[in-house]
Image (cartoon, rainbow, N blue to C red; front, top):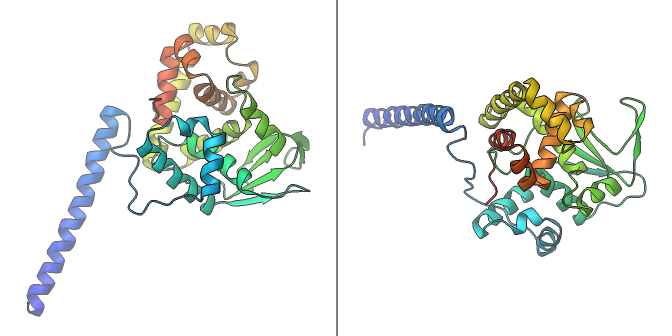
Amino acid sequence: MDGISLFTFLVLFLGFGILAVIAFYVAEYFYAKVFHKPLFVHLYFMPKTLTHEQQRILREKITFYNRLSDKKKKYFEHRLATFMANYQFITKEELVLNEEIKVFISATAVKLTFGMRKYLIDVFDKIIIYPESYYSTSNDAWHKGEFNPRMKAIVFSWKDFLEGYEYHNDNLNLGLHEFAHAVHFHGLKRTDKSSILFTRNYNAILTYTAQHHVANKLIDSNYFRIYAFSNSFEFIAVLLEHFFETPDDFRREFPELYEKVRKMINFRFD
């Protein structure tokens, strides 16, 4: 192949590549428009694996993982390994960082974002863990947990994080709650496909729940704790706690709202 022919080949190859990328994004745009979900979620060419110790902790601690199919368990393990490698874990005071802390906390984030293609979000880069409730200088108050976008940090009291998993159906899960704040913040600030779908359905939730008869039913039901109605960020976080902790109750009590939350995070329980 002479120089001119090689140049022509490279130009054509590059041109077809660009057209293929454009075609993919156009196809995905219309697919998401029609079906309200991305064209694909899981696609890993070199999936990562966990150590035997990490797998043991995952099986013992995360019910969500145990209910997945074998194929989806591999996806979960890859995301978990990637998540742990992508964020810094910092323990405070006498708390010593170990595999249980890293796996348990990371699996909570992976669970929440399992239906989203974009699961490594950049609104935080560190996870800080105190042994118990701690004094936060951000608002001069004692906290069990918080998402601090200015510091790009998610902070937990390990004691209170564990209590969130002690009862699986009380709709109180500190880990889910704080990661929900981060996912919410990311969804409103970024333009990736997962964020666009999150924001679209988030706005649909706000419009739906702003109707007087819906709002009154939500409050009168006593299903959602009153704290949920303090602002939109707390409302979404509480909705997601309920979605994962008592999905059957949620779907039975508020089927339309449940479906909007399901679409927001693009996840359906098998």
